Image 1 (cartoon, rainbow, N blue to C red):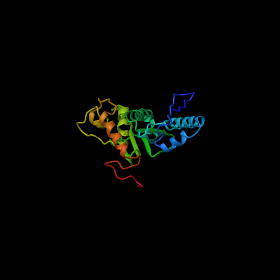
Image 2 (cartoon, one colour; image 1 turned 90 degrees about the vertical axis):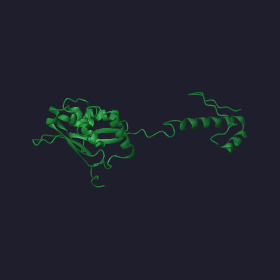
Image 3 (cartoon, rainbow, N blue to C red; image 1 turned 135 degrees about the vertical axis):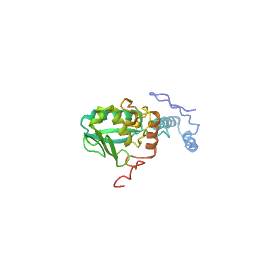
Image 4 (cartoon, rainbow, N blue to C red; image 1 turned 30 degrees about the vertical axis):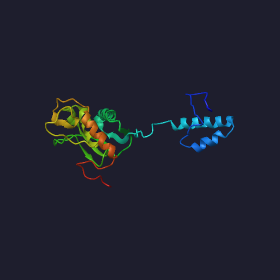
Length: 215
């Protein structure tokens, strides 16, 4: 049996009598060659196998997250809070990634003040797109990071849960009361976002919202 053994890296053994990549004809032709030439070809087969083996395993899922550009140009005093909220979601759901940009993006955050009682809310123009409005006064009543995580959750397809929803759910929002300090999405919320992004892209329509303009 002719064996080529590289001097470096892990040992590579290619029996020339065996099937090489399913091509028995190639093996037979190699066996007709002088021993030195056959050994050289065997070594080249090892190199090729090493190159093919570099990278992700065959059939592995795409590990690249769905990037969601966002700008905080108008976020005012909420800017750092939103950055923390972005990191919370990025960590919780590896399949998505909020990325802050220095210029206006399709997802924007704006701090505003109102005397009408309108609190923080969003207006979506597709998945991961639209406006997030954070009301200044809300931060005096509720935990700011919980507000930001909640509103970003809408941009990720999550809906409000309504009265009676527990503090453990960030999408319970103000219904959980000002004493609720939880700013971490629970496993069910994380799974819902991951599942939605598995079959949708940024810009797709979000359930409960009108079709994105321009679609």
